Image 1 (cartoon, rainbow, N blue to C red):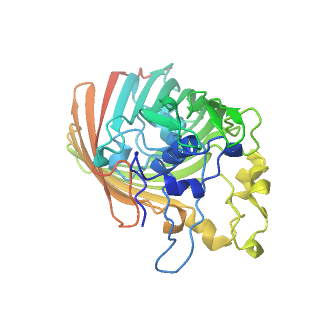
Image 2: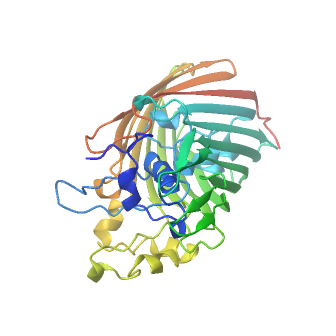
Image 3: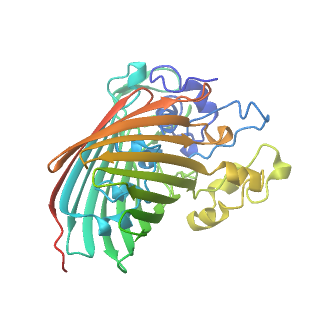
Length: 420
């Protein structure tokens, strides 16, 4: 078992696991990249599945931070959100939900300490979002994700200091959502992303120095949301969301090993029952899969699409997304292992107090993140405070948010008008 979240000492083993763009991140920079990849959604489990003996074959992507749950609402329900009730965080979970949001305008913010459980004090995730309804059928929204890795002292391959760096990543986006009918909506998002892991440092590969640069990309999201009232008390909803469809990330001008962006497919469902005028319960389920090709296996006889990492990196974005459904060296069984499952529940009392719980499952050969979540909400007038807490449930997988309380603040202003 590896402890992979210690900012000061535990990324060295990852240098052997993670491919970096043309070796431009030797030593210091590779440690930064590994720290980012390790700390986020591709948690590594190097021993594979202890029960079956299967070896891990995790999928590594650039900027996995853009897939991390940004809010304490979904964060308290096992990271479900494709078909949850529309709110100001919908840009992350399913942008089409904005068309069904009840209020005319709203804003949200969440500040998340990173690796707080290990005593790291200068890493954090900040999320800001807001929306404005244009009329009863369409809504505009925008959000900002900013991730700071704190201050890191860089060294070259000989251990000499190359200065202090403040690596960070951010994504900013704009969304438009509209109702196609009284029960169906469509959402589209454009996003700009930047990953600055080296602050433009000159990095030595042992013989020459390579000038690094921030990796930048443009991406798009497409969402579909359907909600239906069974009767006055019951409602069902379904959502499908493809996010971060965009160009690969490059950290130098001569890069030949560009990182795939974290393109992702999320589908989900919700059932809500308003028991009476004071009590309401919702049950939610999400299935989640990266639309990124599976790396080739060391057992070359099992590789059908990419016989080596060179072929893997040369795969186009669209081709890789399509082949991600059937390119796993282990066949259909391995493809199923790449599907993450989120399940959660929510209870509201008088639309003022809420209790939430959930569970997230990822197969041990694909990262091994498995954790339970709990939380609650307090709503007063137009302001809502949401709280969430995450507890890892396996001994072989850590989590950067373990035993960390997240707090979200949301302000919703005025109800929508009843007509267009």
